[in-house]
Length: 400
Ligand code: AMP
Ligand code: MG
Image 1 (cartoon, protein in one colour):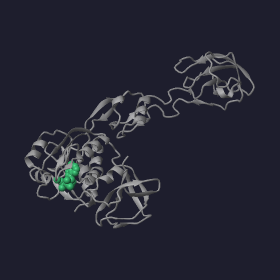
Image 2 (image 1 turned 135 degrees about the vertical axis):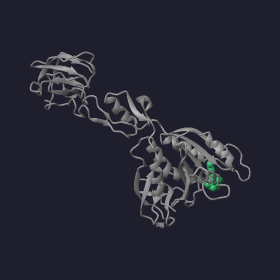
Image 3 (image 1 turned 90 degrees about the horizontal axis):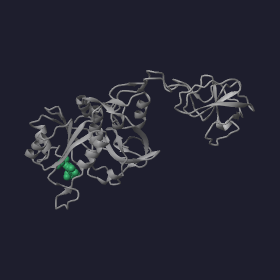
Image 4 (image 1 turned 180 degrees about the vertical axis):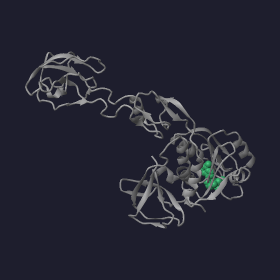
């Protein structure tokens, strides 16, 4: 038996990042940035107004003073109107602040209030003198030119993409999404909408895996379900050209465990007993083509647990990510449950702000598929714990 960490380390060691290419920002959502992005300019680019109001020389703009409005500056205007003594310039949010101004008086602090007017008024009366520099957003106050905007290895979500745009780039260097094939094995498996005969069950692991792969940011190139037959498996595998192939089922030492027979035999993939529950029998190897092969046990909860512990971190590394793991939080057990000694328990769970509990009341069996529907997390219980009692702190892997 090897530990979860040993198995994981062996797999992650074999994972190589995918090639990189330039991508339009509109197409880069969910990709991992492959090179640091530095801002082309200071952010903000120029001193600009943080409010709709009046640009003033603050020494003139004392409470009760009426100023002559001599110009109007909208966002996007390149004007830099002069402001003489007793004068003000109407200015909009985001517009460049005239060089003569040293503060902005927001509309609310003038006699004109926030009523919308088409053209600038002739005069404006100041209600309160602004502080020096009031409501002026200074050039470079957010970041100087050349500052790191978004770092290599960062997953690109809406906020990161917008930061790259603000830094002056419409495209970014990203890793190609890992390409993944899925092969479910089991002579008992039928399409979910077919009617099962005695001994048959609906195939669900490929549904889980394909969705989990996509949700991790990788691409699915093929999904197949095959019978427990070595020749069929060899043929199915020969038709796959992916960065990784994920098998489900047939990984233990049963008479018809075809994945172990073929991959563990002639293809030299190593199979281990991993100290976890569920998911003990695991195979992993790099095939001659360079394709990674994951051989997961077939029980649905085992598939889910194995994916989270081993496959997802690997796909994230291949995609170029620095952070590979789901976030973890600690919660108090709301109920007690048993955990196998000597094995890490990975239990579908639900949690709230304070507590965690198993998603299934029926125990922790790896065949308890319905527990997955309710689960929003895995409770991860260390190998040396045999009993989780009410109130115990539990590590929770958040799956959102
Ligand atoms: P195995 O690992 O092949 O021995 O399968 C373990 C258990 O998981 C058996 O009860 C199988 O029927 C079930 N199983 C295997 N593959 C799937 C699948 N793709 N979808 C649903 N259940 C499966
Ligand atoms: Mg099977």
